[in-house]
Length: 332
Ligand code: ATP
Ligand code: MG
Image (cartoon, rainbow, N blue to C red):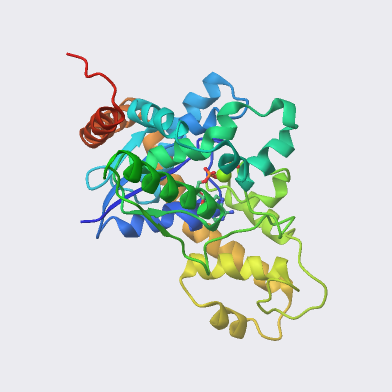
């Protein structure tokens, strides 16, 4: 079975709808036909300023949300990135075959460092896409299900895999991106041309998986819509309404056209009420299951320990090949 790898940063307590629709929900479906590794990307979360106690809490909460959303730790490998040291070890090796200019072209770094002020951005943030490449290549993954926002990083991953293979001999599987273009990207409700993001500026633009239904409904009702009154999908002219339709479609599995037809002649407010109901219906069971898991942190930690053990069976083998090919003297 093809191997699939993906992860989300524990950069907030709750995941948001973009993470769910663009990532976690697709993972759940992939478990049947693939050998999956899903990790909580805590090494990535320290590329920006962070608080240690908060990071530990968020790592558990994020893992709980994976399971609550349908990741089965028996069928898939569920682990915390820092529990598998080969992620960081391979990242160093890949750093040394990545061009400085190549890394400088990554748009996420430009966005995130601009937000922080160039002087506050760390080398870790700059090297983030290389660590991401290591996350994928260390498992010899065939496919990487990520949102549209990660397309450029995946391209870098493929380039690094090919470069290493050419220079040192065939070592890595060159992974394919699995991006669902239509429903992949969820935008900020207040700024519908910017992606919904855990570290987003506008609190009201974000729908969190773990927030109470009322709070989420309120944000949906306050979502920025567009001039005119017509409900139709038009990313250019109507980014706000289009975003609501995208979310609606993604969560119900119904095509956008069908939803547009249903709301024909009705007002934006009707669409928002309908969407709030859909969101509540999807999130309520996830919230309940997540709470159960968080009520027993020791059991959750055991699940994660088993995941790390399973993961290392693959990563240790990859790393020893990489080290040998690069010419590191084997330790007796
Ligand atoms: P941060 O702001 O800390 O970078 P994030 O919200 O961008 O957080 P990540 O942890 O970077 O989330 O990404 C996790 C996964 O969620 C990735 O696969 C990414 O493609 C997907 N994702 C993130 N934001 C969105 C979005 N707005 N729409 C669709 N998918 C998204
Ligand atoms: Mg991100």
